[in-house]
Image (cartoon, rainbow, N blue to C red; front, top):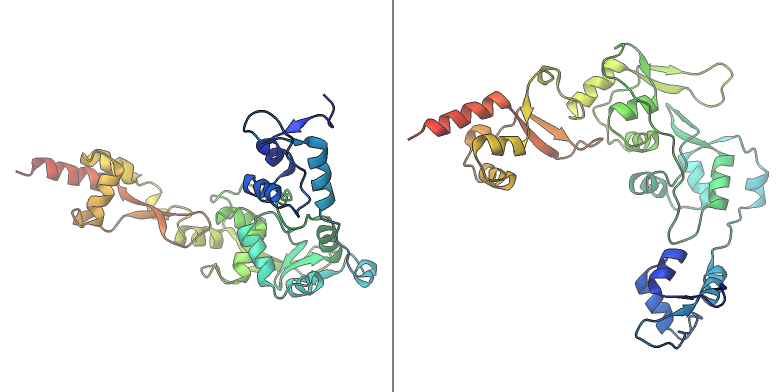
Length: 301
């Protein structure tokens, strides 16, 4: 069957053209939208000619963005601060870029350099992104480099860069860590232990922290177990519920929340969401403590 003769339904339009069922319905019901007419067929399913639908969406495709000639002719290797990038893109403030890193990981390009004065991008990086990214609607995320595997047990004095620190602190990318750091959302992290700049490299020096410094911060944030807990057998709510004879985890947590287990109100550890200093995701208790309570409850008259 030729594409001209092919008929498509709402689900196929959604799958092929990246829209939604409600949007297709809205366009189809609006006589001024220019959306193709439904092809008369037997049955209740609405069908459209594929070639007409394809032409409609092709006509509505966003045009490639253009930037002022002065921007395109300037030094494309020059490093720009976040504020300068904001001005180049015409944003009202740097909060837009911060929101990209916070809410849409891997959408905005990673900094080309992350030094003591914050993240910086080459002008060419921003120009390439601004002229090639899609317009409003669904956007494809750029592929970011995976974070390295970093051990907490290495040389405590080894200097770690942004990517290694992001990995140890549980962030999804170096960019999300840099964004959090610039916004003051990593208050436990002290000033860098050193600044390093490779010979002949452009831009500002890179920030480095000792492994021991980062491991200590990771322990305080709950990303790594505290040193005195590493050899403790800690259990979560599910195991505690089973040991204490509750029918499920919810029953145990309900009893805990209503004060029926005063001996367990203070956990021995907490497991935070990775990269977050917010509320703990799971409380943890020493197994010996839970088993002792279970034995006491079973022996009570």
